[in-house]
Length: 535
Image (tube, rainbow, N blue to C red):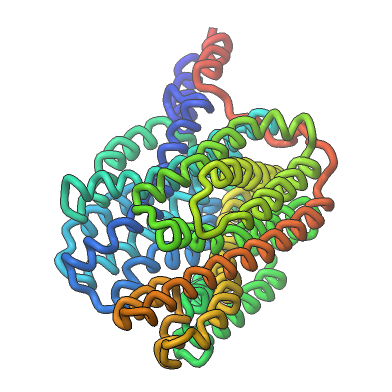
């Protein structure tokens, strides 16, 4: 009996991760998330160096920047549901390996085409890693109170990664060539792969019925088309472009077809019945709305800091750090806030605080008011992270444990779609408010005014070519129009955030901590129990 029990214990330890406990697992998952979050932003500061080194065309440069989030967003549901079937740990480890290989390929790329392929493979790796981290976290923290704390730490790490990316990229570019921003991933992957294989527990859903390959491909192709179309609209492309409306329409049709297919199947990839639960559907809507209101605004704010106030990229990154620190604080305090106030009040408070911070930012003008900016960014970061924390935690807690991968993929896809739509929507609002202010500037030809109306950066270039009093007048008019457009965009964003606060009223009033799922045992405790049985 002792030998049989020992063999069974060895098999279970291998499945759960020898010597692991849930907090060590959380550390491994946070390292995974940090890597993906850093890689999503580290290239932003390296674009000029990549342009100088590889001489890509305009379309190639656009794909170098956009192909990573585009591929990642389109494959989240595919790999999230596949992890539920074949094992989330297995998918995560494969994502680690692919991420490391693609990072080396990107670092050594000698032309734009190779770099685009490498960035696409990084997106595939990211799509394997992201939903797996959340679904494994859902598995190893069955107690909702502990899971809330774990999600708070997880989200704080995401905020750190987003902020560290540009700073790390700037540091590496000052000392090495542009490929170094990718090489930094390789040592982390070389450590994460064996450590993850040793420590992470394997988990999967019930796996009833065949995996819907056709449905997975429909979801991937549909999301690819929707995200591509939305991104191009946000980049200022016209509705008549062949790479804007057709992908958007075809993608939307495929997504609709995917939804109808899932409703008909006995064993769907994604159980759409989850959306019938008010807490789940409301949480997903809150994630979309929060990102829709703020991601486009973040890009506009970066332009304001650099082009209106004249700050350098490094100074801009440092000026945004208070937002990151506040988001970290909100993530770490989120579990306690959720227990005390409940999901409804917490998410409503987060939306209202963020809306107040956005309205406060309308006091910004042509001069640098750093105190106002720091105070606003602190409130903005704390409010946004409070909103996202409450929404993510409620969404995961409402999803059945066997559907954790699919639920995590839905949450991450909502995040990406909200961000893409936000860039398109707020970018359109900004352009509509900015461009009219440049018509009729004294001494400036109509053609020059039309070119300057595309963006503030282009307006400065046109003003430099014109020179003289006309150039000075155009520069001043462009800066004033940009500030006006920023104020209008801020007010629209605040309105969307207030709408989010109203939507959050459908969330549960209190945090229900009863958990039906079985806990994942700590191996040391399991071994002690088995030794008592064997005796």
